[in-house]
Image 1 (cartoon, helix red, strand yellow):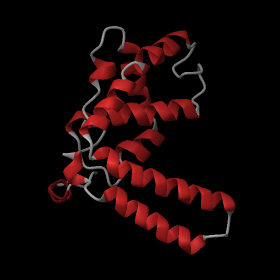
Image 2 (cartoon, rainbow, N blue to C red; image 1 turned 120 degrees about the vertical axis):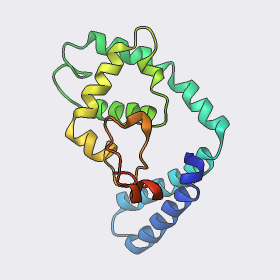
Image 3 (spheres, rainbow, N blue to C red; image 1 turned 180 degrees about the horizontal axis):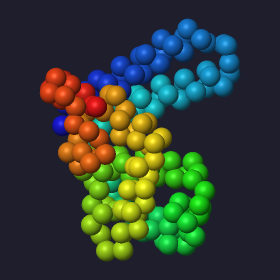
Image 4 (cartoon, rainbow, N blue to C red; image 1 turned 60 degrees about the vertical axis):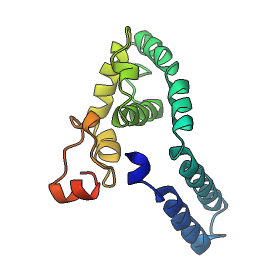
Length: 165
């Protein structure tokens, strides 16, 4: 579904970034570098999402990371990776776990023995306003049944066009 829905999307993003990079070129070395990295990332993404083998390899590489996350959460004295302090590491995991759920791979941390702590952590993460606004309710996300609990179903017109909430 995603290959059809987003066909050409990465290249369109790369072209848009190239246009904007040209417009602001030389204003800031850091900005020039950021645009260059974005362009490379989008072009690489274009080839990646079109390849089922690459997607399977990524899921295969992700699967072994979940037990380590579970162990880190078990050692934490609070609800977040570093106790009571929500950090950028929690944001990273919030985005990553949501994407796994969104793409239908939530079983990696929801159905396996000993993964319950990660599923509970994901629930706490998704409830955070920043994760909800920036990930689950991002305007261009097409609606996805695996994350319907966190991503309200759009009206029929948006749903028919493949646009999220």
